[in-house]
Length: 80
Image (cartoon, rainbow, N blue to C red; front, side, top):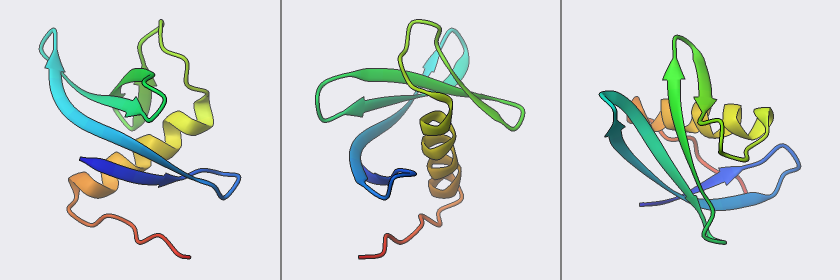
């Protein structure tokens, strides 16, 4: 499913988020419209990515917070 993530600079980034498992871990595959893909997982309250992925810390937190909100069945509404 395609989700729209609002970034810190105010722009909206469409991403595809899919939940899966990797070595018995619950992970989320995040695919961007340019074809790049990252794997995120949660450890306690912190969202992390694989070492070989490319996301900066603020983008990981933004996407992780969005995943938390949709996991709670209450996705945030985008303004504008």
